[in-house]
Length: 262
Image (cartoon, rainbow, N blue to C red; front, side):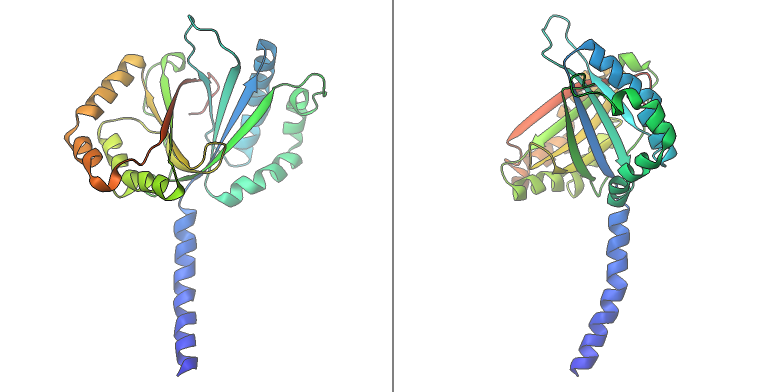
């Protein structure tokens, strides 16, 4: 009898494990790299590296679309440091972990990126480099290219982070996007989302992040006004099971560089 049970259990695992692995493989895996820069000269060097070496190398490695963004700066306020955000969508975790090995073998990348890659200790191209890793949401498993017509310098890309007080409570907010269909609400209202992701490595965990895009600031404000007035949002945000699931929210307004794919 025990042998039959073990045999049936083995057969069940043989069916389920590939299905689970296949389901996991359908979710994107995102890396957000944030360059912290001190000077305009550093910004220029990183721009040149990304445009002439890094993005072309990622394209050769099979990553067709890479986003590069900079903060929308209020000219009336002093800027403490310059920032460049790089969004890399991977189709799997394995693709992320294999990337460095591919780049190390790419001679064209090594040549075109020499100024950055071989920089001296007393002349670095950046001050610090930050990395955030994210799993895509089940409700939005693949990243999207925004459907916008405005020139890139006028666009507004809104990157948001919602931190939770605990892992379980943060998971509850993610469930609000998935089972609660907050993702569907964004789609219905035309927010042109690039991605939604659960942060699995970063400095502000537990949290989730997502990016929506707009033609300009007025278009952005119009969309959020419609969101706040939407009947489904009022219903969803009032549900008892989704209360107090965000302890801190951050918003960054960005625009895509002229060489960004996204």
